[in-house]
Image (cartoon, each protein chain N blue to C red):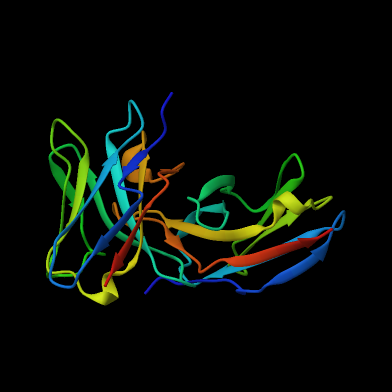
Length: 115
Length: 113
């Protein structure tokens, strides 16, 4: 029973490059959440998706960031033209319950380092 | 602006003692409360949830909720070195739509052998 799978575990990018972070939710979960965690900071909500739909992106920066959760395949968090301030741990979580947002199961995260 | 406040610590507790972690929240409409444990470099792991005033016990863990004071706490009895981690308080507001849980910054707990 695989948990939430994220890859890559570590991602290094130079300023101006694109970063793609992948998340496969737990089997049977169709609700995916992305969080960002800066050093010494709490988890900050970014976006909530269901299959083929963005439900809430109120935590996403207005520019350079996008997310999708296609009918087939993993959820993707895409960061274009990365800057040093994007360096953080990005966690994906999934839930079977949807909007109640309870009992989130987290992936192991992707540590993004921007040089 | 929903806020969840925690003392960042570190909180140092001798092995075998009770560790007490505290959290306050700003949104009176909050209905569900969670404690997550996060080891360094690892993902958060749900350890307790509580929805009504009072205490909820699960093994060595007890969550306490006081909605009038907008306060939630986590007690860890018979603390073990393996309990050393960062503990994140998370709050969900009912009717708040589909946005995510609001997390505190976490309390770093150190259990001294």
